Length: 468
Image (cartoon, rainbow, N blue to C red; front, top):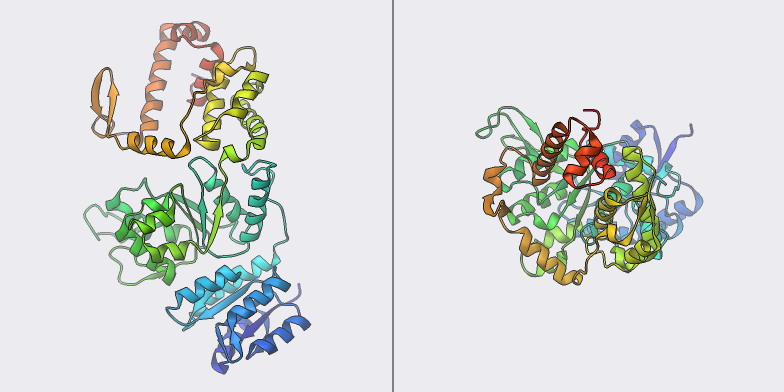
């Protein structure tokens, strides 16, 4: 294998020498330039696997080098060296196309990690988003999204993925990870709205044994668990303000301090985040820190709602029906013309997630392996704005009505991690009781339950009861 080559651009001889020695020990050949003009000359005459450039140069700014490389050699990863604390400069460089940044004084361990990741990125051959990815569609919006994913996969810049609930933001984040140099490292997704506030710091940064009541052993936080990989913060707008401060420091310093630890631990993770809320509005209303917003919003990627790419509905429908059929070993049903027309004209406030739920329900209700419009059970829905308000107002209710009485869900189901788990357990109990009463005659049990045999079989498969 031929030796890798790197271009070092810095006007300080000591820094150049430090970088040359460090990269030389990594079996990387180096060439150096003290200014922009010399660097451009070297770039035009040679090929490199990596470029490291200082931001302040005698004849200009390091951003000029970043833009020059982006225009002529976009596959060449360029990392910038910034003064300590110059986070705004680092963000500006990454928006211009820089692969990553490192602050002075240069930490050699961090530098080696950055160089290894950059070299891996430079060796990646251009490839489309894998066909097995759940990102499906032929619309212009989806094709532009896929092109953006391919480009962003090579960078280490934080990406803010915006879009409505159910539009596929986590799938986009996973695709960015899978196509980049961190693909063989962990991808960890965390829903910021699902972690209790008092446990948030421990979940994110970890803790040491005995650091607080109940800390019976050391715990590795999410940053350390995702070491070398990608950390995806879903619904990041739900983070409380005090946690936003701690997250900002962890991202800027690339290190975390577990609760009870005396020293910080260096981390190497790529940050991706998403929310269905408008972060700009959250910032204006004081619910989200502006400095954290600018740190996360280096690159913004918008995922179009399903109603804006209706030409993808047919493809998505067929894919989801095939997936459902494969899971339970039945042939995929077909859609009647009326059902196709109903889906094509439906508003889909819940986007792809709602489409999947609609098809799953219709799959269990349809007869003769054909889904008709009545099986879809679609109903008129309000516009997105009013839909979101309705959802927020109803989701904040703490009580659940059951048997004409108000039951406090946390008190009633404390042993269950979520409402879905509780409802699944209730459904399993109902099915088992019906089967026992019918002496495990599934046809008779389905009749007693008022559902089709197909629906019963699907539910048994889904709950893992088919062999019982």
